[in-house]
Length: 374
Image 1 (cartoon, rainbow, N blue to C red):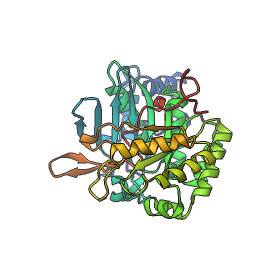
Image 2 (cartoon, rainbow, N blue to C red):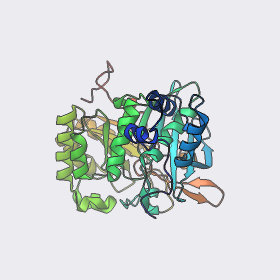
Image 3 (cartoon, rainbow, N blue to C red):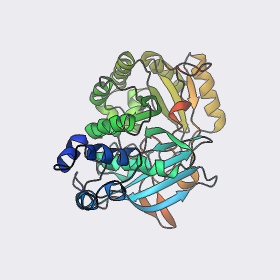
Image 4 (cartoon, one colour):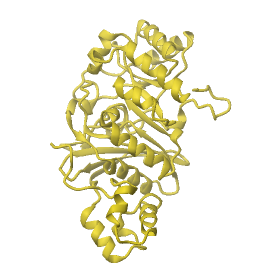
């Protein structure tokens, strides 16, 4: 597939581009249009304060990019997974997780993923293309529309794809999520398998967005087997990038670790992980491995996860265990694949975890009584 879809989303153009599209209109039209997009979550054709001719003109040039193909609701009703068709027939998935007074959306940044991590369904499915800014932001719009009385408090880039491989569009999307949707930067997180050049750039962006590194192994031989990009960016480089991120932003990186039975859950693995976490001044987030059709190994049993936690804490590491959401609808960490299953609407996998917790579930310095992340 090509890297440019046949139509643009209304949420793709920036203010400069819209100013050009609104040539000949009163200056205040830009603010009206922008407010409709980002405060009311409406495309131009649904904005009642715009002239009919202008709405028709914009609608002809810019059409919403996400077409709902399927929706699945978890058994407890608190997790929703959407399968979207894109204009060029690529497909992505988005996961919305409800909590008592707020919601978190896990968005995709690519259709598919080129990183090839074998235990991730998205990685098993391969790569189609990068998403546009509008295709990313429309996922946030859909989530805000579906939150009901709750507020959309958190956005995590832990859906399909490697966000830092779609770097420029990711950065533009982050700026608009914070500045225009009004979601605080500390309530936004980006996951990566470890693209070191982009991690170094990201550290210099001046954003207070969180960064999660999908580590999964703390020696280069095992990590290369699990996460092939490690051949190009080994662990020493990852540690240096984490250190720079901490230095530039004042925030520590979260090391994501999928617990795989008999693979990376031994005491020796905990010792290696503790050494990396201390060197990187990072927090560790353990993720019980979720099943995917193309990966034969199962997740670690609960007692081994508990022992792993004890060993990490004994070695001075701050660690949490992720409570995955939406496993029953293939919406948890590593389960997004955007392909129709024979008996249902979809069975898909995320590169680092649609089952991600709220960003605010991580230790934060502005929460008294919690372990501080910074």
